[in-house]
Image 1 (cartoon, rainbow, N blue to C red):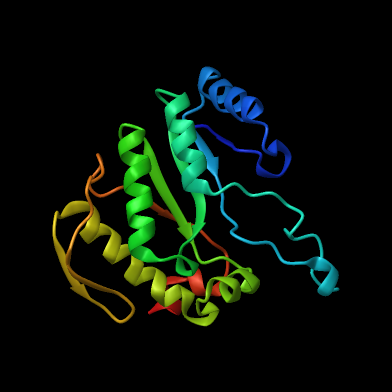
Image 2: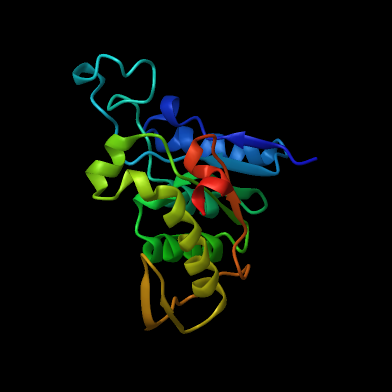
Length: 193
């Protein structure tokens, strides 16, 4: 059995010493992996009376790839995992590069957890289509696998074009393990086809 700890995003703030102590403490306690999750922007709940207790503009979220690069430099053994990156709201090739960098800087300890998200506000703010997110996710995974295993890629999909280009450095694990998670309808395989 593997045991993981979740980075306490909403309570950690920006205290670098606290972040360092937490990350190193989790590794020292023998956990197998450290999980971090993703939100780029928060919605202003004051302008949305039905928002409820979901994350809002008042909840701090460090950028996951930056946080994991920081954690990679502070640790030697523990696995580093995103759970989850809201993938369809992000540029695919850029995420492939960011993931590859975490993978290299951690010495092969990275797993990319992805999902489609629930926050339409983020999709609007990032200029992406909320309604095609499940189908785009499938193609994004294919693009990742090509970029992480080949020095030069030529790929033309419905949403992606890679014209004889590649990442350098390539990740240690080829391809990087990808975990998919979610409970919304677009994450169901039958709904993404």
